[in-house]
Length: 178
Image (cartoon, rainbow, N blue to C red; front, side, top):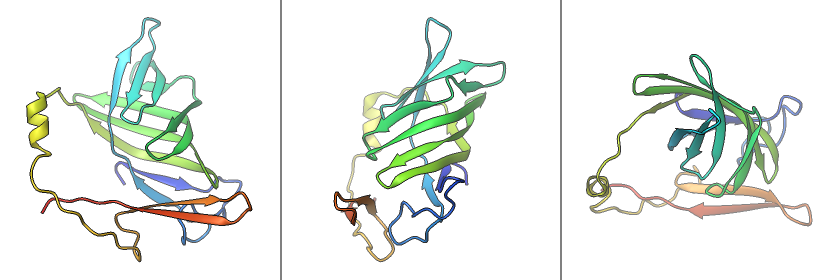
């Protein structure tokens, strides 16, 4: 479960509808957490973290960790078309390795869900020349067809329409190395 977050029903609504169409009510959804964050120090002594998703969070440096400060910060993620409020984010560092725990509320089109990442980990990287970065992505890529029956290589959104009916939107997307 390293870098795997869970999206689950709030404690007050243990049998809420799943954010994934077809999943049983009350079931948790596991979501891999990928991406980067850049930390920098502000003049007031706070630490600012800017993510690859365009979100900015403020932290307080403690003797052994960074803690989200204030402990309720909102961001709208345009990549996944959803907003969330983080209520706890703790970061510890040992050498080039970071460990983190995050808790919050994901605000989806069908309601709010608890978001928990218990075992987050990242590794500090040094900037690389642009040419070296590009080489990792050049070459032949092929399309891998989506599998609708297993929801592989698909993004599925479920929302409630203006008339109260449930609407499901599926987007096909995938690429892989040959």
